Length: 117
Image (cartoon, rainbow, N blue to C red; front, side):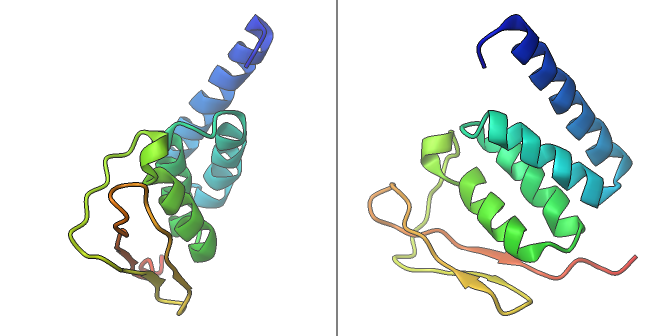
């Protein structure tokens, strides 16, 4: 972000994303959170919010990627794992594993299918 106008635009987009997440129209929230992380890709909290919105919107593959970024220690997350290898599985059968930068360990997360509304 450079100019004051760009900063204000980002803050408005962030406020909109937070508002949509609170109201729970998840597909709309996911679209706005994607704009937030495109502008500020280094804030792990924003990636976590995107992942949550994608998860509830049933975009599990997108949620896997976003949760991976949210847990990336380079993005401010604190990751600790005693398991040498692990995978992140979604109920769709998708699998992703990615090394972390913490002592060569790998992280684990399970993502169940959200309950149908």
